Image (cartoon, rainbow, N blue to C red):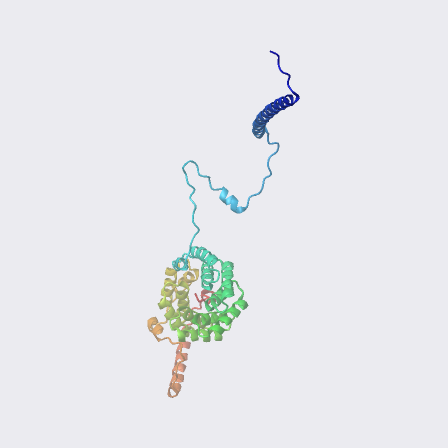
Length: 372
């Protein structure tokens, strides 16, 4: 049987079918090759990067940057190893009461450190800076003390205690005019303040204004009859004025109030020596040395009076009675008794002139005015 010839229409359809199959095959091959090339390309990049990071050498040392002080302090702490944990110390917390307790226990350096910490956290508290000034002063840090008192007065310009104690620091810094200015401000704010009046008298004493200083100390003692340093300083001025009998009562009272202050016992001993009471003077100098074994003035004075002999008719002095009888108030003199007092004074002068002169103590054996 003979094949029938393919018509043109059929032939065209067959060619279209073959072309379609061929296109699908080429497309499939192209997609497959593209996927393979993409996969191969990604693997090669990763490998190349990894090799580059490992193999590239460091050609020069990195730039050295100086660390801050805080970083150095931290870097000095060894890093923890294994199961060790780094102990971080919490910041120090200081209360006013804690710092004040250290001050009153006499640990002034510790108190200064604690008040320094306290004021850093309480910069608006004048009392904190005042106590810092006191602690620094007691520690012998006069410049630091001045800074603290200035800070207190910047916060509270009328703070009397800061004014008074700042004046004390200025006296020790040998700046008397500035000290006077501070104490005058204190008196403007508190005319009756005992500490301010005592310090004012001390400044007058240092300046040689003895009568003005005496008036100031008497004003203090009229308010506070047992003010220890006013009693001592009043007696000291009377020694300097060679009013030795008048010096005995306030010094006897001061010495009885506190037997452990060497300079007061020494000043009493000088007054007793200058009034001829050598035995009592020796006892006072011994008490001064008991309070301070290195007190050279008392040691020298004790050697001096130990070789002196009292007048035969000299009455034993009763220092306790003299201390009890001291008064800062003016003595009221009755008019009817004036003539008798003059007669008694004349008799005393005649008796005194018949006695042998007493040993004269060196002026350097007495101590200067103090108020703390």
